[in-house]
Length: 458
Image 1 (cartoon, rainbow, N blue to C red):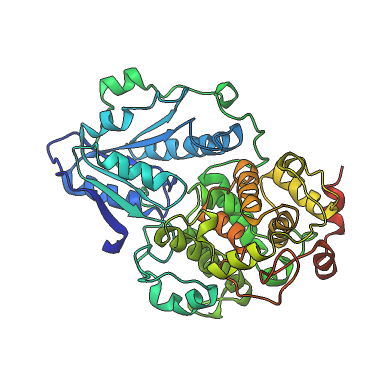
Image 2 (tube, rainbow, N blue to C red; image 1 turned 180 degrees about the horizontal axis):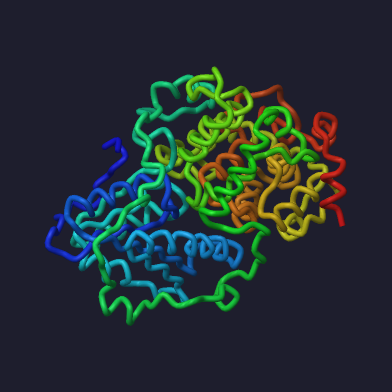
């Protein structure tokens, strides 16, 4: 394991005389190719201790809904069986009411030799880990398992994808995690503390009874098993990806983002799969042209987004956009709009644009938008809103409410790109100023989407 991936969050001591190693799983909710699990198991071997995995789910975080809870809980069921087979205790706990999970981590940590968790800039998770570190009286290590490039590797912020892409060969971490660290492992037996079993029992929970939004689940199953199945299906059709991904009618995108977002699938697992089925000369990964086109999305764009979130404070705020973009959008704030739609009209896919409506309906039902249309979806909202900051906040709300991979750095970057991030100034246009424009008519001429629109039009 690259030592640069391990960050000591709490300088409290490691207690070798305690009962177990605690892995607090908050980002990489998987058992395969998981750097944090690698570190936790190393501690188990060195200390001769068993492993307890805390996999808790709150109800009071922003945009909590039955859609996201269901996906995460399905993933919990997958890892529970794998941990049990290795002799580890997996404590999957669903908070029934806000605040009822308070004290659970501390109670488990009180009997832990060391606590290991995931280091990720996603959503509120880093703030949660930092707050926990101030309360625990035991060493807390946060391990970066976000991507092939360690978060600590770049020493500066990359403002353009082309610059990040050029630097990749020097930034990549050659030491990936174990493909399956639980394979053949049998850990010393361990039990949960009695007060934890009594106060926070891992009982079955129906998300329909929780005080969260009852937004319907997506027609996908969460968890490692489903993620690996989706990856296998994608690998079967990887050749021709660079052309097929463009057309909504072909639906050629990978569809892996939900499992990547919730940590059910590792980018190392994806890379290994691509190398096995599509080897080739394209560097730095040694894959075919089609596989390289996908890796540019998985590595260049996804990891650039994570590094922006890691380095730039307020990366998810309108104020973090490039100054030139904010200036030009402000200069054109008074330009006439072709239409103005409120948030409810947008959420209901009730605009006069059939292409945009189709994309929004796919988001409402499937929790995703085809990659080609996702950028158009954002650009059109900018054209239909009185001010750019208001358009930004509406896109955040729509994306984070409906998208199964919303609240992810990659998702935030997709929205920010619509307002000029990672881009350059273009010839000035009404409303957009120097920010790149996109229209439904121009997109319709470039890609095949007649069947797509028919499918998503009532």
